[in-house]
Length: 254
Image 1 (cartoon, rainbow, N blue to C red):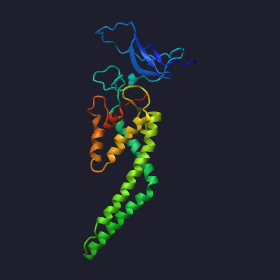
Image 2 (cartoon, rainbow, N blue to C red; image 1 turned 180 degrees about the horizontal axis):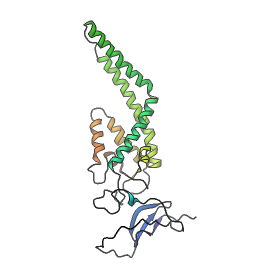
Image 3 (tube, rainbow, N blue to C red; image 1 turned 180 degrees about the vertical axis):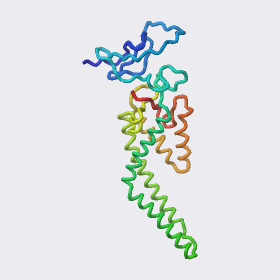
């Protein structure tokens, strides 16, 4: 079977329109066929079963699930989408994907950084043993300055390790697959905001910078991280702040 070159082809599921073929798969982007006059007002149409798009230059029909089966797609009013009409993913799916990714990164950090975790636990155990012994003997509690300094030092090392593991995990997956394992599991993906395709290396890095790195800054990181996560709830295109930094969008997988 010969693969047709990228271009606009008649859309069998939408008479009078053309659909973009990227050379390997059908895009969600359609347009009125040249020379077709669109009526300003159309009669409401009853629901028609999905018709598969025929592959250009081939007899076999395209059989993947259409975008129209995703919630909020198919011309419904107030649908939040990219500029070319791809519906952006529900925030709850994004949250679920983030939880899965966090578990994966957390397990790897725990395995690699186990000596640091054990050291941190030992510091707490030794200090509280000293406090308890001083209380039983009627002495003043030991100075917490050294304990605090040691805990902060170990915690900083764990934070750096977490960032390194998260970068190695997420940046290549976003660039090469358009999704982390969590996003793959929940049927969503990352793409440039203004065009179909995979994010660039720069966009993948900026997404990581705009979420993981900025959220790790002491004092302001927690506030930024919360604002970043909540931003998509009221954004007109369901972008979080790190999406805006990288000019990307999270949409449903094909």
